[in-house]
Image 1 (tube, rainbow, N blue to C red):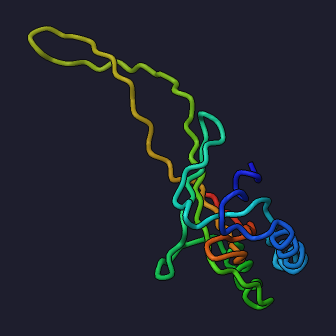
Image 2: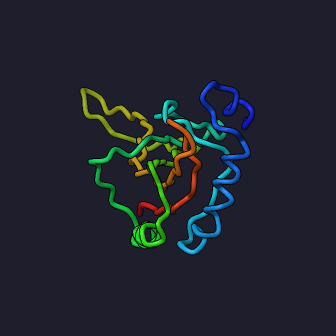
Length: 156
């Protein structure tokens, strides 16, 4: 997969990306931010990363005028990153989408017409908010970032 990411024209040298990741990893560790493998091209966003048929992640770039409500732990990580001078050029907002298996529960419904008829229907599940996460990208090229995992929070 990594070789596919690196075979386009303006991709930086792999050793530069690795050196960038290795330099910032111990500094990010102080802020409890974890390095991630690979690179992210901004031109590939937004996108959907399918994990398996029941799960995928939607990934999009956070715009500069967008306000995201996150967990206080994620806010603390961002504050520490700013104090440490970690140069995140862009942020990615990702959401985990899980499709639960369809369990059919039949409930009787009585309809009054000229005769009493019993119909069955399948109740629709309530929509669940998706569990988001935030990833920071350190610039490694014109539209290429080295990803670092900042944090996630769960919707209740």
